[in-house]
Image 1: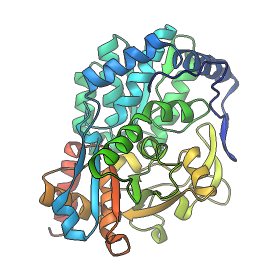
Image 2: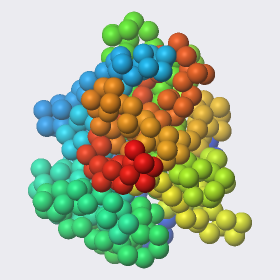
Image 3: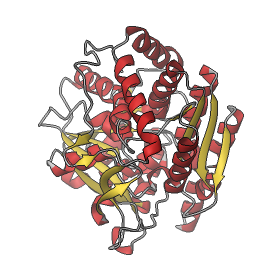
Image 4: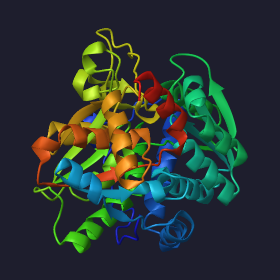
Length: 402
């Protein structure tokens, strides 16, 4: 987030994106949400806050992250591919952009207790990291299924001083972790801040998280213009809740020549019902505080999801993505587990880069669709690194006889 001339009186983040978004929250959270919005709007116009945050992003987190032209990968598929390297940010993913912003905001608000949810573990690690840096108490909620498949990140959170609460009910994945974090916030809103990890939830979270993640797209747009003298034809990012994708897309929304493609988790294929592709099999509804596209049955009950990637295994998508799709500015495709594995393997073998399974869905989609993309320039947000996924990758490769 760069310093802005906007004052709280002139800048107003939307409570809705078209028909989507809003505030669907219990009465006990309305005052904390309003307090959070006021503090965020005031501090984003406060030079001391923005200077401190930018200093942390540069000197602690490692921004700007590089832009890499993956030449051998590009030659193999006949597409000019560039990667925005959020995998090289401290902690290994884009999540730190948001957690540093929110934890610094919480500190300025006098909130000493921080709650967070996590799926793939990267948001939990980034929250624990920011709390350790700023001297804040940290509790992270994580589904038992995700804790088992993302054990390295569970250990990292504990080493960073966080208390990790394992959620054993429901599907025991990200949805259930968010449920528990929200319940805990309802219990102590006066002293606690909930660091929501994506562009989800009740207002102001979708706008605020996007605000902290916009740095990705601003850097990428400037870097690609400097390096190749022109904008890309297509900007691609994986989409779970969608913070890394919104972080990239916002900088290119005004550029009609740049197609925006979000890649959801196709799991075993949308036709099987074992997937997390909201736009391929969902309908509009309310979950975790906002109106958006989600996977639900005819009675409005949330359906189970599946993805080899813990970070994409969530039944709803951020409301700004729903709005971008509704007005035709972005399109949303899906890549299944096998596509993601092929994307991971190709980048590792051709470029020496281990991508997170989340980002591997974007890679896998580009690999699968390379004929239709032939000769174009594609910018992919590599949202995280794959260290956390090596056990899952090894099991998947063995299962497929690799």
